Image (cartoon, rainbow, N blue to C red; front, side):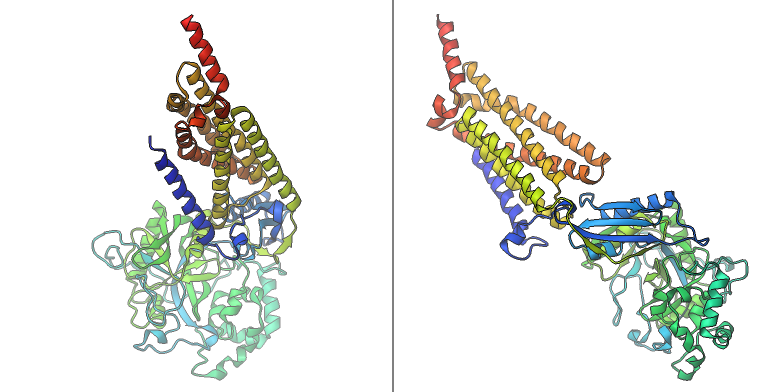
Length: 631
């Protein structure tokens, strides 16, 4: 063999690994800062946020089943990569406590969002608070209240930063946007000419905290704005344009003082038509305010209020959401694959929007928002936010994409929220607070000291029993430790892996696994010498016979670590990950260092010396055996 080649590969691995440590993603600060692994909650403390579940319409807390399902979904969102070891627990009957190591206020901010996705056709549109009322159509796309969303990924001039939805070309013939050409929709497929007001039998809006019934909510709001303003708002059948008559908003001035809960008590028609109700007020509505599938709702995007139809497609119709880097456009997108039933719904909705009926109000809304629009818009609503409202350029029969100003992190966050599903409970998050370490740096130092003592004892025993071969053991453990440390730093930055005391225990246990492989190899070497071979000839034969045993033993350890990782949670999962990682790296050192260096030692004079090599007893037994045979 050529041991220099294996050693060169090992050296290249070290160069790549520590290049990532010092110059890779997330590497910043001083020399010591770049070598700092991400420590766990039990070692350095972290950030804790409390999510308080909203009461239902009867003022009762959520059921235990709903809270447990919500806990699991939040745990999946926080531990999307499975190794950050966040703590997610239920406290009482309404609270979920989330604790993450380090300063993670931004990470905790959105994990409690409901993530309820709805696809709704845009029926009507007006300006936000009429201060940016929709202007008459012009030839300049930037003059519209909302930039024209299209089926392409490239934004048009004057476009905002909001994401868009487009079709991923499926290769189907005909049509636009990668879909089929749609036949004219029937009257039953189109939206009504005007959005009807809710009848007495219509579902009530989501209950507002502090009010017990729909009637009590509205009575309180009517009292606050005054009977005249309320009566004027009820009579409105279309939004008031303050751009042409600024004084037209005076009767509705009191509505500008309503908070989000009070705005939520109004009917969708009042939320849309009253000019002094702004998008900022609509954004303050409680979570779940517009989640009802069978109700028309009002939402905003890029300075425009939109009156949206009932939800024809919902988040559960999506089979998977994946963040991807669009190589052609050079931007991150979220690809959506629908279920079989969901694809049928999505195709029907895009067909309805692609060729609307002549009396469908959605076409007027599309033309008001985007000059020259010939098809309707479909709003993609996540919780209370319209994240996209593209003009449907064809009947979409395959995979679709949400595109926009995403980076890798934001694309993954949105994909995770869609993939893991909507929370069954509406939450409000309290302010995040810092928590102290449960074990602290002294325990970390004690754990590292225990690891150092263990490695030292192994090295002393190795030098005492194996002598020159003991240096091979010591160097192998040192290289394995350096590989493991570098991997910890890189994984902490890229995947969120946090080192806890349980993880340190996993690394210490791996020392025993590494020591076993040494014993197998060196004892096999002694057996070969005892059978009459020279030390130089015994090395390759001992490796061939010991290699299978070493691989089998390490494979069993790795399999055990994988099973433990899959079935466990929390700190035990971290222990399993650390044990598996260190065992894999030990195998790398065995093949790229231990055997090559033994081959090089076999060609030295020191290796032939019984006292120096540590093979004296085996060589002495060989001579005795030879003498007996000669006698």
